[in-house]
Image 1 (cartoon, helix red, strand yellow):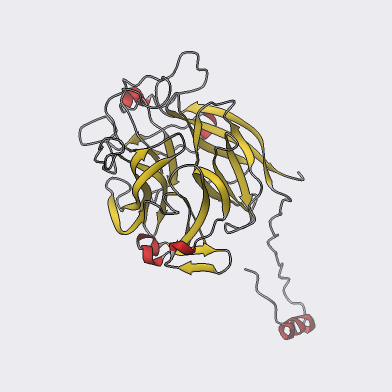
Image 2 (cartoon, one colour; image 1 turned 120 degrees about the vertical axis):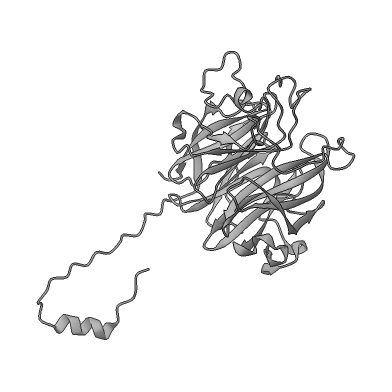
Length: 376
């Protein structure tokens, strides 16, 4: 930060004989680009999971069906881990016998509620290459990371689905929702949601006992980001039809729900009372991710908007308010059954890479959006 020059000191310097020429270099302020962020162009770059389908003309660098017994999966929640690697959590996962059909897993075997992959790929222009997946000792198949009882649907604890992940306070965290019942499209019921924590770069995970959200919570699903010492969580109720709420905690306070403060438009940050949280983005919103883009100097959030049948992008100077109108990122007319829009981490500049799921294929694809600002 530039420090103010005291006037008396400045007068003294002006009257002193010039004995030494001291150049002064002032760091220029970064240019502030005008207007909201808009989507200029979007394309599919590569397949991330599953087997190559007949007629596909884009890369499939991972061949996860062969290497990790991952024939069908979804989501791909990406975050920068403490060791610099990117972790990617996927949702309900099935074996190499999976075949795409009407949508979802069908009758495929080796069901795992979630799996975890790792990548150090910094050049996504030709696809996202995985370093590996978390496996059980001596095995090659990806293992279930956060345990689930796999009770029958609507009869107990059916599955455990990751919704967001972040590195904070020296640990990696994943937010998961424990599914009770899959309902009609875009609607489901949960038993609870909670945080799980790893301090060994994702090898083992343990429940944060102090952070559990009830079934009707406004933070049944989440998106994490952090800035200036704060961790922020955008949240929605279970499903894809609710509005978006906001809470924050310090990095060390993330493991303790009593440390959370919730945004209330009338009162500001209210500590310890989720009921006080008011929406920051109107309904409907599902499967979010959020980043701060240093180039545009704006927050960018992407999510599924079922009313528009599209993944949409919005941007704002503040997380709490001032979000732009939704702008179509990917249209369901072009990719039927699309959902999940998870931004690849640590992105600035005008290129936005994100992971998108397609229901019929029941797999994950790498997408790229070229962004610009109004007025350019």
